[in-house]
Image (cartoon, rainbow, N blue to C red; front, top):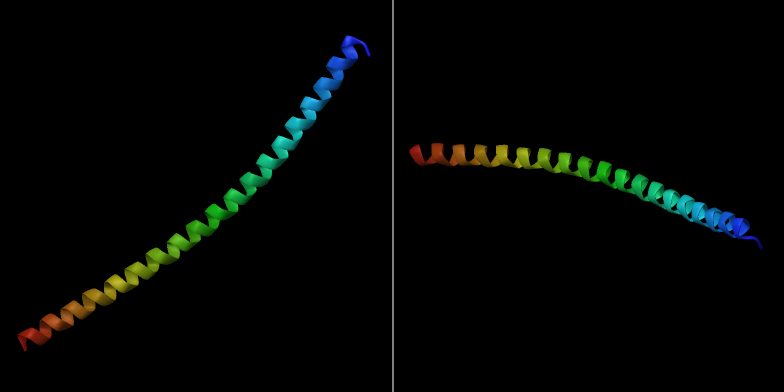
Length: 70
């Protein structure tokens, strides 16, 4: 094989490796975006739940204070 052919073969191999890496990173990115979406949704639900519980606790405290005054 001539030197040029060896270089071309080496370059083809490197391009193939780069394509594999790009594919893997693309899949990883897709998975991470899906995970981020899931975690964002979960966080939103937890914040709503926390606010609901906070409101309930405040309501209980208010009732207890009114019972103390009675």
